[in-house]
Length: 109
Image 1 (cartoon, helix red, strand yellow):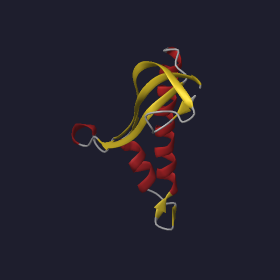
Image 2 (image 1 turned 135 degrees about the vertical axis):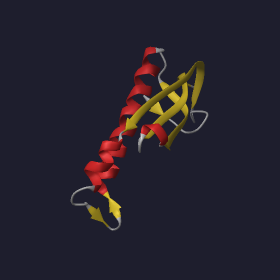
Image 3 (image 1 turned 90 degrees about the horizontal axis):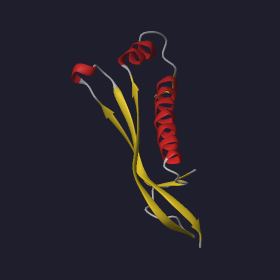
Image 4 (image 1 turned 45 degrees about the horizontal axis):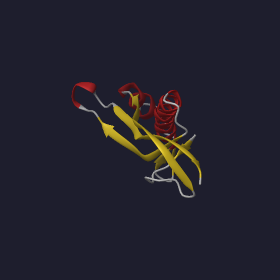
């Protein structure tokens, strides 16, 4: 499956637009407590444990988009965007990772 941030696929011809696909994943407040209540794994000012949790959430969102795209019969996603939002408020310190793009089918030119 191709994931592209561009609206087209260089050297390929998009033959069908299947529609919008999205995937989401939440990183809950308990992760913050786990990461910051004990010993911090800080290297060069970065918290690698927190980065790993963000990567897991991003991977879950990407997998969701890939599954939905395949179910539509598409073989690529163009215009891919990844967003991180702090939901705050009633959700505590929850971060939502959202992946959005357009499912397409392409062929060789």
